[in-house]
Image 1 (cartoon, rainbow, N blue to C red):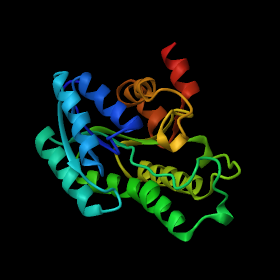
Image 2: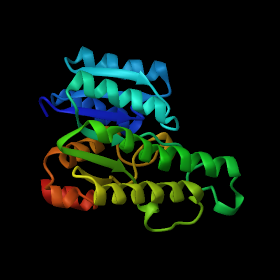
Image 3: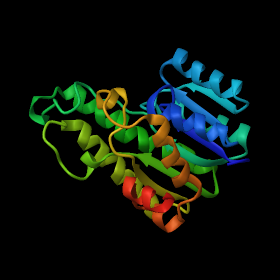
Length: 230
């Protein structure tokens, strides 16, 4: 991943932090953002201590002007953008215990604004800076495609994120795809699932090894990764 520039949102913890660290360890320059200044600074410090290059900016993906600034900094410091992984996400309530009819309107709105519109804004603001051969990898999960009880508007928001990815895939020269790593042990999943550091390897494969035609407008799941790397 030498000489590549990657942007990772929601990089203060979970999948975002693990992806940012791995990409930097592989030689990429990484611009990363999150709302939590302290946690973000810790991730950047760890990357730099390990010899990597990173810039951390406090940014809220609900604010397109924050994302515009992030993409401009990434492109200036890294000579354009080669990879975008919009990981920022929220889950209001306990995972699997949020029936749609019982949710507050504020939770519904914030799920869509953060998990759906946030992906849209990240990709839209990156578009002017994308290099040839760039890839956008949108993290998602099976609840976006296969409805399960009591995942409520979180599932709706992930379906929106996947729809955004598909539409950009149809309109951009860059390869835009969805990466579904299964259940990952993060705050959004209630601590159950696979280690985010193990999941980061799947994103690295999707970023540089998977064929364009398998990424663009497609969903890359655990099965695809395991078949390709066994």
